[in-house]
Length: 499
Image 1 (tube, rainbow, N blue to C red):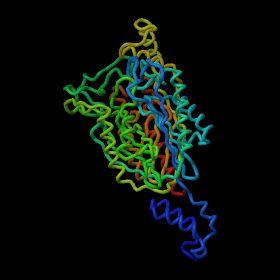
Image 2 (image 1 turned 120 degrees about the vertical axis):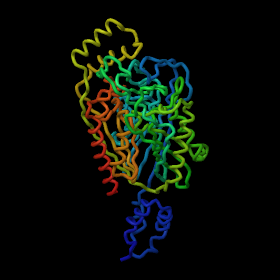
Image 3 (image 1 turned 180 degrees about the vertical axis):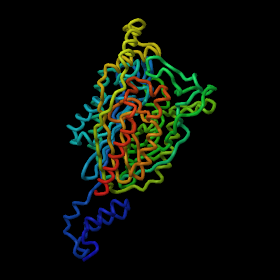
């Protein structure tokens, strides 16, 4: 029997290897099947899998201003657009299944809004709901679509963005074309530092109504604060990338991932996430007139990290500097990539029920009395008023909440999707224990359920543990989420092995 008798299986192996020779050999065999003894008829090559991809960027910049901007403790308004906001979508199709990944220039998005966008996208594309990953970039300079601290959402803008997310996925799906895909990682240490610090006893910033009357940890303690002792955990400096290009080597799309919180930007802005999306195209030599290109940046595990190194004197930086450093690291990663003509896709999704950390009846009554006496119906003006209000709002929540977790497998790349602001230690653990050679963590995905401190962080207190709509999951949520994500990653890894 000829070693090439099963031509289809042989070509699949070649395509999965990423070797361009497999592409040309498949063409030769399809043209001259009679040259190989015992080969199947010409129509058999129709079963050879073709990898396709499409990408799109849809503008979600608000047309009417001013609007409330999410990300602060007290209400803040913006009346100017510094740079446009987008929903950037990437659709991958291995010939068996299609998956969609969409990053949105927003601070936080609630699960019901994202679920509504998925329904619209499913109707337009046929992609199943459980094969869509939609996440916020976490820019702190975008209009509010979800109530956070002293900022209430804008329902009209939320509805507008919901439709635009679906439009981006639909457009990306319609643009699918044959594509090659690859992944790699490098590091950018310049702009990711743990922002939580252990302080000398009795010196940590403390606020009433948080559930933490005493605190050892403080967020952003300042460069000259002599009470700083040490940082509370590690950070993840990796810049992990997914590159999609035409069979001829022209860039089609590029998904980056980095674990810093945000850089900061005035007015309405996509922050460094938007700058990166443009800059990486320039560095890759993308020519929009020849081949439309979409750059995308996602937020990794940055719940306890930002761009500021409080162990050193202050330095100036902005979103352009952060984007440039991250883009250069992404370019270094790109040069390591071996693009594949075909890669198997797998995606798993599950729901996990978790408890809510609610105030006691006494804490709830104290907060109500405080608000009635000091605030009434006006917007909150400081930390104390904010957490009194948050205590009442968390007290109105159900005792449990259902969160959505996902894993995507793209041959040797695993992607974990987490609906929380996740700590660096959690991200590093996921990467270390993942079955994939390379893993990307995308936070604030498929909803926003607050910070996700590991259990050992709660006794330290500090902002990210303070009970509010930004931090309400049970103290044991992190290990449950990690265990579930590792199980999903294992399932996608095993599914890819069979593919």
